Length: 193
Image (cartoon, rainbow, N blue to C red; front, top):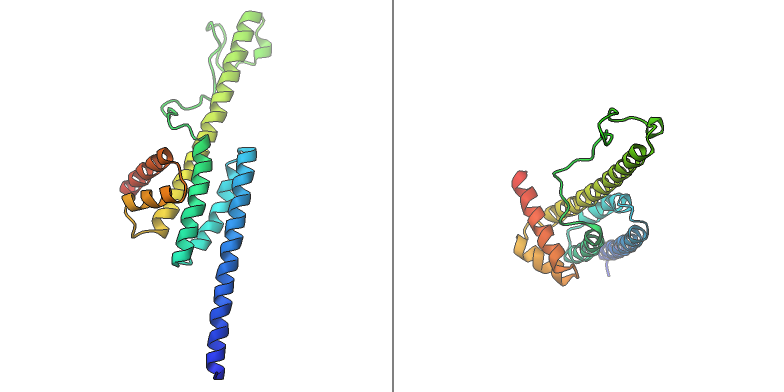
């Protein structure tokens, strides 16, 4: 074997080994991120992983495409398990909540309310609003990452139409109701851009 062929062979082998290591690292990182997200419910775990997936997507091989679809299906399943598809986005969390009875202005410190019944009612309203604001923020974060994953899939798989992408995500283990919502969201975002 000539020296130039030997060099070419070594370069090809090194590239293949590097691609396999990249796939392994990305797959392992995805599994860790998904496990940590499922344990903690912290959407930022997924958010921090997506840039690694974007870098992996730059390698446009058929194998990387399969890996991307498989990882995407796993991530999207995890996110959709916590997503409330019926969540109403009409009502935004309130910064100030009115005190029941109308005798005190919004934002009054509950400790300054002398009437124990009004104070208790106000503390309940405040607790409910804090809970709603937390849930609203969590659902917003989940759907933001779902949309980021959709954008990533659209960019990584530009030749695939919605029906083919739906079929591939189903084949890679994504739940059917999640796929339907995902494809609908991707189509809506595609029309906006």
